[in-house]
Picture 1 (cartoon, helix red, strand yellow):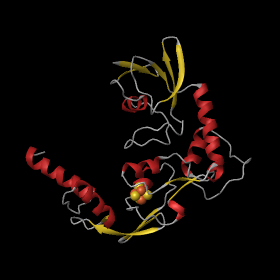
Picture 2: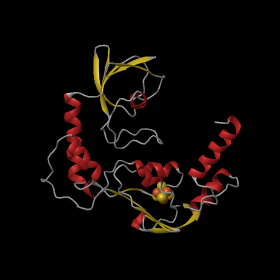
Picture 3: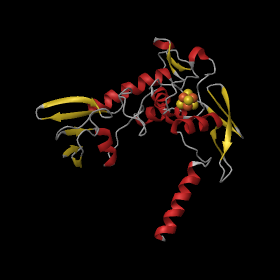
Picture 4: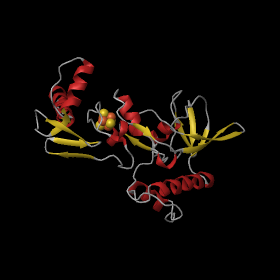
Length: 246
Ligand code: SF4
């Protein structure tokens, strides 16, 4: 089927989200709580777009809106810009010094927020991607705790988690760099817990925590080599070169 985004005709599969179709066609829609590795959550609302179906017009979060028929979509309008500006201002009030939000503030030409007292150290916008990633790993070591302005992401009782495997998926998907992960030699520190890192048997670089490696091995119930992703990709490319001679 075909849909129209910003006057561009785009091929779409039934059930695909508007964001996926837009990105495939190089149409920019801003997002904060979206990761290609996870299904959309529609939390941050930055990806709101205008959808016209016949005579009906509505605003939808493009990351969770599945296409079921031919529609026309606008990703940029005065109303949408105004809405995104308000969202950025609200986020600025929470995380005034975060680089991701500062960049958005510049992009939308917004002044600093001075009306609210905020925690200068705060970097988390509570988008939910980290807890989602951890849940998808099957671990659920972190969750949101407290309410209102005290709401935050934490391990249970704000103590080093007994179940965290130090995989770093939560830090990897965080759009604002709020989760600190530190790899020093053969040690990784995340969520105030220290993990031993294993070295890649090919290039020698530390790349995975020992508990993370054991967790994956047990989950897939197979012996796996301690080979990092880069070396694995290189090995596949080499194999393809050997076969096809390119
Ligand atoms: S590092 Fe710990 S908290 Fe973060 S995703 Fe992995 S298991 Fe979950």
